[in-house]
Image (cartoon, rainbow, N blue to C red; front, side, top):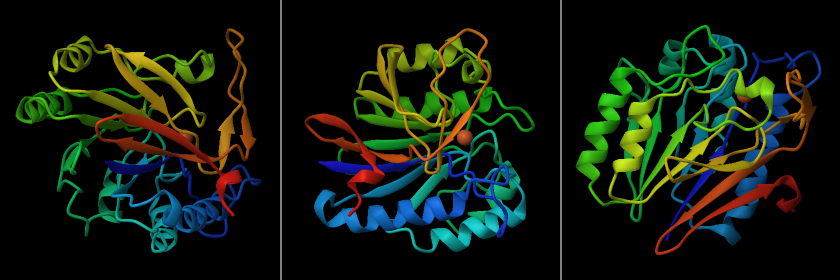
Length: 260
Ligand SMILES: [Fe+2]
């Protein structure tokens, strides 16, 4: 059994600043990391922590410096993919010492764990809130899946490939891409997709594959399913997700109520 923890949408600000002047995203991340650290003895062993995008709110160096300081207390080795609030080059500099970070191009990566291979896919379109998969990323994914043959795969990507019913978020979702759908449909092994972006636990299916959207670490997107509703934020409603993969696969929601 291989266990992977996922946190998402940290939205860290430069030190001393609050998100929208009200939400202390740094304090929320510190609480999340401390809570997960306390929980590890009863949910472990866990192999890896993956951050599924929006590491920072502003994409500026000051925010990544602040994040670097906070992540020093992470209880596990971690990897990350960019979200729409990130800046690819600032994020590359932030994680330049880590062997998973590519020297250039999209921030795609692969790690082979015991029961599953985890893949990170870069969906960032610099300067835009929506996401897209470039030809370079899909070429990389195609070659990687071909190499993996029947091996189970867990794909992390910030923008979900499914609509959520929250119209404000769906308008800034992933640009539909038939090639991506075909690659996932045609792969011989099991595939799961783990996303962020929506700050709310939602599950769905894409290309016949299960999709999980993780909650954020500090605030949720409001649950408003009316057509053309705007995006609202609710402080709290934070959580993490554990992917438990072996002969059986499970996806478990971890809420702050689980922290003692
Ligand atoms: Fe976000």
